[in-house]
Each structure stands twice: as structure tokens, then as C-alpha cells.
Length: 172
Image 1 (spheres, helix red, strand yellow):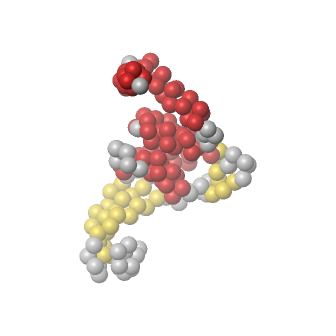
Image 2 (image 1 turned 90 degrees about the vertical axis):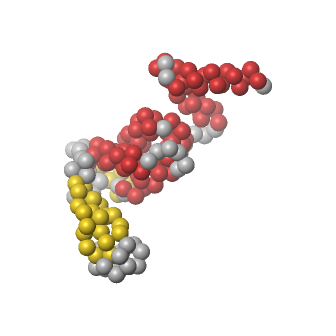
Image 3 (image 1 turned 135 degrees about the horizontal axis):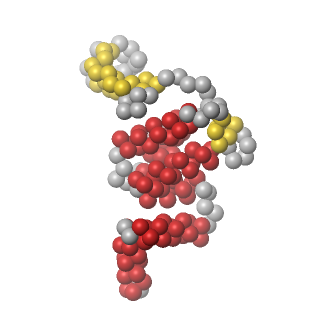
């Protein structure tokens, strides 16, 4: 394992812990040359999973692509790395628990959106705007309105948003 700071190949393991779901091992390591510490994760190698894209193409599943999509949606939002990692672990658990070695990209996108909707609605809308490929502002506004309506039904944040929205209308 190369040190990410200096590239030296020898290090020592300081601490090893199983993840909460038991699917990976987290290791804290210390480089024997520069003495800096870094974290690595070990995962069980699973049979290759193919993602069926909207146009019918198949491509290998890559964890990095999932991470990048979720982190992009959560950028500059109050969503911790721990929460992002939990979402990724849950999505992957669902992907690899399926009997098939192929999964539709739609399943991945919908699963991510379910989590983001619970965690942070702005991150959810950001992800949905790319995933659902909104063609114009009206589709975007429809998605926002559906979020507002659900919030109003639940008596939660939606009522506050409606009051703020109504206040803004009254001032213009």
C-alpha cells in the first residue's frame, strides 16, 4: 500500500475495525517514511456487476461514480461524510443483494434519491435534476412543488416553506 503523501510503500497498521454493516474493514495506517497517517478500506471482491444504462448499454458498476454523484449533490450542504458513506453502503448492499449480476441505472438513481430526500432536500433536488434530466425550468418547479406538498401534508418543514413563500409573494 503506497503512502498517499510520499509514495513510500511500507507502512504499519495502527488500528483495524469492521464497518457497521460488516462488509468492509477500515484500517488506520502510518507511513514508515514520512510518519503521516491515512485510512484505507478493504472490501470483499464481489462478482462484477453490470449497470444497464437508459440507452441499453451495459457498463461495469464503479463505486467511484456513485461516490462522485452523491458528493456533487451534497457539496456545500450540511451533509457529513459519514452520512454520505452510509448512503453508499446502503445502496451497494441493495445492489449486491440482488440475485442478478445486472442492475438498471434507474434502480441506483431512485435508491440514492430516496436517501437524499430524507437527508437533505437541496441535495435531493440537485441529484434529481441531473438524474431525471430536467429539460426545462417547469420540470424543476414541478419537482420542488411536489416536495413542498409532501412537507405540508406531514405538517413539517413544508408549512414553514409555504409561509416563507407566501411572505415573499406579499412583498413583491
